[in-house]
Image 1 (cartoon, rainbow, N blue to C red):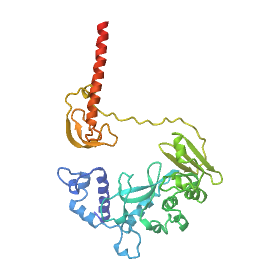
Image 2 (image 1 turned 90 degrees about the vertical axis):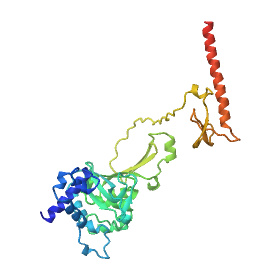
Image 3 (image 1 turned 135 degrees about the vertical axis):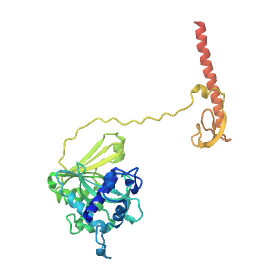
Image 4 (image 1 turned 120 degrees about the horizontal axis):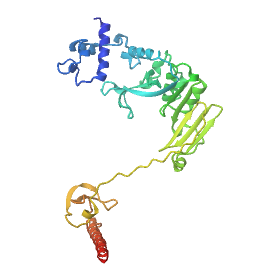
Length: 364
């Protein structure tokens, strides 16, 4: 077996790890948890040696002037990108960021944190994919050097495009590796979207695009403010169009105001009744009224600090053992004494109701 075959076996082993997970690498070769598809490829000692010594680039070519922070795996990234670009059969694309999971401490500030991702810690990549979910191109995030490393490639961006912002520059760079922009549509979220980006994609590259916008990125468009729209209720919308540039801004009220911008051909607007979502209050368990006001077995006990049941701002460490309710015992508001009188009045009222019912039965 030559070195290339061993390298491919090592890559295959890493693929199996994604589906068959063990606590340690040795478990794939142990007698009790042996995975034949992995253990038959090489010995565990050989696997550890390859894993420790494998290189994807020549370290002798690394100089002080090298700015590529992914230099050691640059050939691997380029190989992936070239293979991704071979598959272009769709006409709807989405630009987003994804994470390569990593929680180590040797990555410096290349290790990013994105709270809304399944893997929150790791290396960040900007990717463009189709409706099928297949990645068509990617750009590794390198901080200030992100665009610098694209020089001389198909994704190279000009200084004017860089000045539009990081998000806009990433969308433009990734879109340059795709074909037939006039019959395709780009989708991206609020991180990338800006008014100059929509105009640039439409005028320079003939891209149709759709995305969500921040309210402070609509360049003074006279659209209805958020407060006014939210007061009118869910489902309210407003829109403004620019016929010269072929753009439309739409804002609608959902749980909060959402603003979107589109450079595609305008479609007819239809109205649909959307009921306002109602949130039911959670059911709080408590003793029934009879046992709570029977004036029997109620006893104060010391417990953790909590809110008083009858005060708006009061707290107490004493609660009724039977009612499981905390009550204030200070001089200004003796809620325990108030509750005692309340329980007595409720008890008398209940006894009077029972007596009236018994009297009516006797009269009948």
